[in-house]
Image 1 (tube, rainbow, N blue to C red):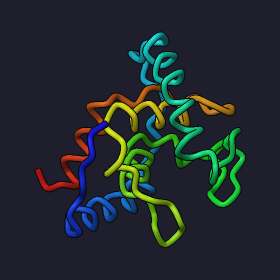
Image 2 (image 1 turned 135 degrees about the vertical axis):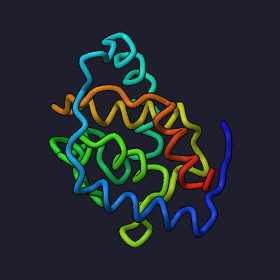
Image 3 (image 1 turned 30 degrees about the vertical axis):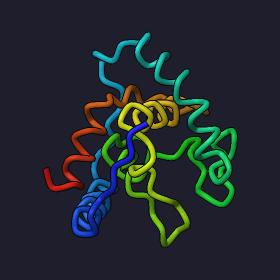
Image 4 (image 1 turned 120 degrees about the vertical axis):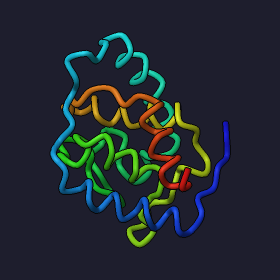
Length: 139
């Protein structure tokens, strides 16, 4: 597991991008999304979600201390969801997972969330996470 930290300026820039992407159109499943790749990511993402996210978002995505993810249109945007996971939202109690989870782990969690509990939004590739992480770091 890689540990990376985000500088304050980079985190602020990525956070600003998050707010912009919250109003972005949904990014539904691509026609090219491979069902086997989605299934593998969902399988890997389930245990990661359980360990890192379920205490606040519920084991079935029903919410609790954190918002419900089941049926939540926010998760339709790959960019917004990945950015949220990377940076968190401390003023709402969500920690940043970018410093403790690697790109593959975040991609697996995001794919799990986007394809569980009635959500059907497709794959989040690890290279999408890497690109957003690099943007936050100013690379």
